[in-house]
Length: 176
Ligand SMILES: [Zn+2]
Image (cartoon, rainbow, N blue to C red):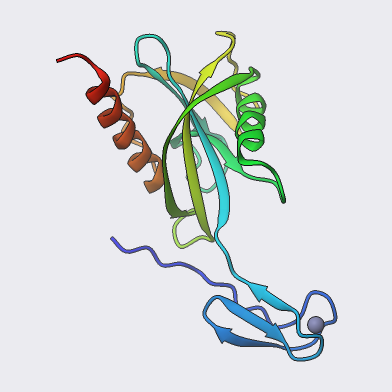
């Protein structure tokens, strides 16, 4: 299924209130001050904690979109934030514990909710530095899953792609 990306055609320049022209679908320009507004995907960092038995920790969403669905721990990077710093910040915010980044899984385009704004989800495996996780922030539950018995309700396509990629990677790593 092809996603519909909602590009935001803004009317006015955020600096001088001049009219914005549409240069192309992803770029608008102010006719007064020349400010160019680019419509870019928002970068997100996702963290998949993996334990010694190759189980993974997922978070149940407490907010819309997809409230009640299971997703990879993470969120939007802050403006100018280093992706690795954002990843560790999100893990701390949602689980209460520190982590060590152990590898890149993949990066995929997605949208924040059905037909929502475009994002890029960068997913990494992490090792938690404490077992004492608790659901915090926008998370209502944290649960360890076997990669072969994931929950049905994983609404973000980029999460599903990342978990499938991780399955393949871990499978290839295991001795035959
Ligand atoms: Zn302007």
